[in-house]
Each structure stands twice: as structure tokens, then as C-alpha cells.
Length: 148
Image 1 (cartoon, rainbow, N blue to C red):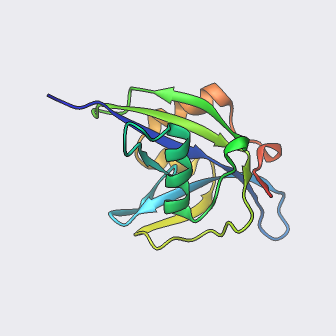
Image 2 (tube, one colour):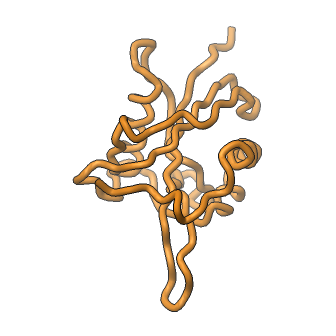
């Protein structure tokens, strides 16, 4: 019997610019040591039946990026059970604000970075991101996360 699992992902919009160039929106993404060129949203699985998905999302975001989300500033924006050939349902939470003391970095074998919104199309789960952007719209600068 195949067990159906619940996963979560954090969607965090940032702003970046290069010298002498305009600002543009970025997405917080992570790469795993198996494929350092494949970016995806930070996230993972809900560990126990007692763990609420928003708590799992906060935990995974911190474990994978070092950033601490404010639970009162999060919103469920997308869910999909079509996650490749895996038996997963993935809930994506939009993070609008990060807590003081958040610092990008982790001891995990993961590299977090703010990347172009199109960069995650080159990684796994391209169809998932296309559907996500269709639901919430392509990220804009005014969508950037607030640092409390």
C-alpha cells in the first residue's frame, strides 16, 4: 500500500538589484547537495499527524534557510496533489513577514538563495510552479516580504 503524504512549501518574495539596474522580484529557493543547479521552494513533509501544516511550513523554512516566519503573516495560497509520480499533497504558504533575528543560512546540506522567479522552472516540479504562478500571479516587487 502506498502512503499518501502531506508536504508544505514556503513562498517568500524578495527584492534584488544589481548596480545600475532596476529592482526586480526574487523568490527564496533552495538547492540540495544532490543537484546544486536545481532550485525549489523550501519545504518538506508534515512530520506527525499532530503537526499543523502551517507549523510544519515554519519549521521547514527555518531548517532549510535560517529564516523565521511570522505565523500571523502567512496565508495558504495553493495546494496540489499532482506532484509528479509521488503520492503527495503539497500546500504552499505565502510568507508576508519574517521575524527579527532571521538570517539566511543553515547547517543543512542545502543552499538557500533569492533567485529569479523563472529560475525554479529549471529545477524539479516545473509544472507545480507554473500552476502556482497561475493561481497567485507572477511575483512583483510590491509583494516582497517584510522583515519585522
